[in-house]
Amino acid sequence: MGKEGWVKNIKTGGVFIETEMSFSIGQVISMTYSSHHFGEKNRIGTIIRVEPQGIGVKFGHWDKYD
Image (tube, rainbow, N blue to C red; front, top):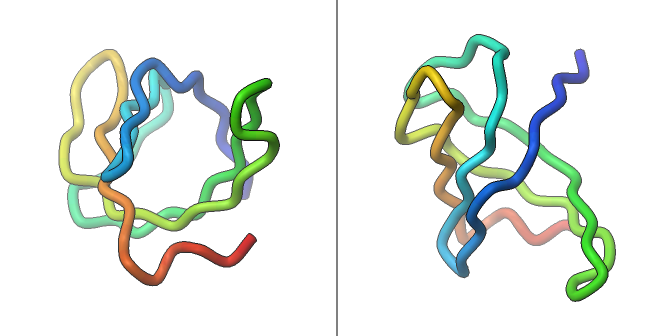
């Protein structure tokens, strides 16, 4: 099932995604994002924060499958 959100802050270790969708802390998700600087990236991460505005996702060491 696809869910959509907007990347608001991205760093080497993770990302904050602005979304209205429902997620749970500890949930493992896969995501695809693109930018002019990085091109298209596929990542896997674990949700470590859930807020009304979105979710904080920590990238794992096993996430580089693109």
